[in-house]
Image 1 (cartoon, rainbow, N blue to C red):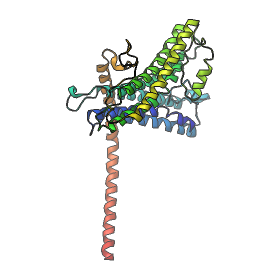
Image 2: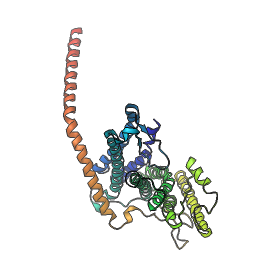
Image 3: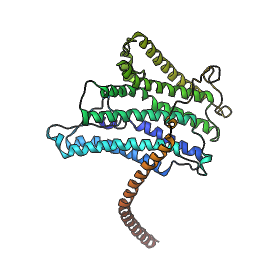
Image 4: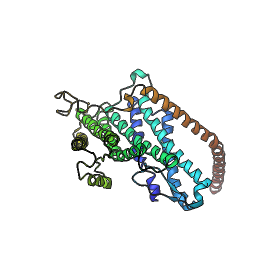
Length: 398
């Protein structure tokens, strides 16, 4: 059961992503807006994949006497690693379970990427020219979701390469890259809760303005600040090992991992090889941490101060986005849609994945519909017989 619980690590972030896609569709059509049909099928794909992974984590140890390895801090969320002993390693059962394990994770990542694509490519029912711009809330949510899934996808790829291609290694760029990804995991642990907070704030603004308003401008600035802090630490984790040869430890303040990170940082110079580098890294770490806490506090404060009059997307944080300084400290962090050709690529990717999911769904319908029709006919016949018997009894009593 503990291993089965580990398989649901991605569930919160997937739920946030589904809510974001639904809210984007409602922005197009407040009455009956829905994500594209293929995007909805991707919802089902992710959901059923996680359910199947959970069932396997329970059934396999009980029925096949195969152990499931405990999930450590270096494995991606939702993944299950089976431990085969002796002759089990070369058996067909081991190969099948390993293949199923990777197919499940691949389905989750591919379908999740398609859902992200659907948010950027959905259009207004009456024409592309009426499609509203992506709201700041949605930009931040998609940015955080992209970082989250990208980190776990890369970690999953590195673990796969390590297990099946290169084996265990003690040095080299592969190990450095894997260590960088593992350290970056701690930066996205806040992502699901931040996304929930941003979506809730956006929903509050829509609730009190009949779906026409937006969070105050300074609240949106707070969302940008928090998103930027996560992105900066994410990039630092990826870049620092290659520049200094040391792993960058991000501040998380998130339970045991956060305590370990703080304990590992007793010396300010422990992550770099020179004193000036230590000062730069320390400054960036604390600046990002202050931005994260300040951004979250700003958003929470904005929820309580929000009214129908000020929920108009205007206003800014003094000395941040009010034009006082020569730079904008709270602009939208770069997202996947900012890359050249990204929009057309996302549309093609989403439609391709969606078409594959639709094909699988239609095949399932073809297989199950005869069974459903037969069972339904039997139920109808039984109900008719019951009605006839009840009518006869009623007539006799009368």
